[in-house]
Image 1 (cartoon, rainbow, N blue to C red):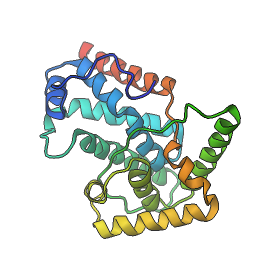
Image 2 (image 1 turned 90 degrees about the vertical axis):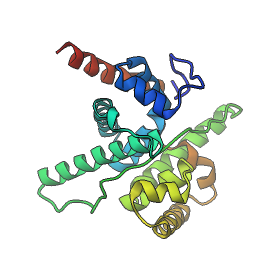
Image 3 (image 1 turned 120 degrees about the vertical axis):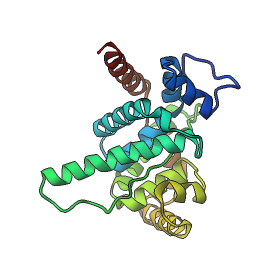
Image 4 (image 1 turned 60 degrees about the horizontal axis):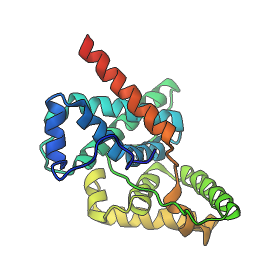
Length: 232
């Protein structure tokens, strides 16, 4: 199920602040709408940071729970997606730090306690079976190469190239200068193009496939935990 497959039909009143107010008032259908709108984009961010499907799902679920419990703190100063992205990145970086301590190694990065954003993937419905297979293989290659980039380059690349965020938005979310965003993005693209060449432009929007079962599983788990808290 894609982000657009949601039980509630979005209305003109479903802007960030109105959704946040509905969630604060206890409207769980509004929170489900929020998750379905942002699920794929936030999953991609978590997946790019943690480089593991299961860890990314777990981090996203925990970030959603944090968001549900702290929604009253959202003031509308930034987009709701930006606010959620920061929670996701914070959760991912916390997991990286815990993992580093467990293995008695120096923390992987001087990661900022900020986060970021992400959105829709492009599909080619007119692909022949052979073209679809080739596209899938190129996407898998891109994901492997992207996983091999240093984290600072990888996250910037996901935000700028895959999610098409502006330099300004990316800089605000990661709390780094715009010039740094530009240089990291350029370097990340250069490193990827060295191994992917012309296949890069075709595949870059399709990385980190987010299927319907993952979408439903994350939403069901989060709603179940929220229901359990309400019953406690």
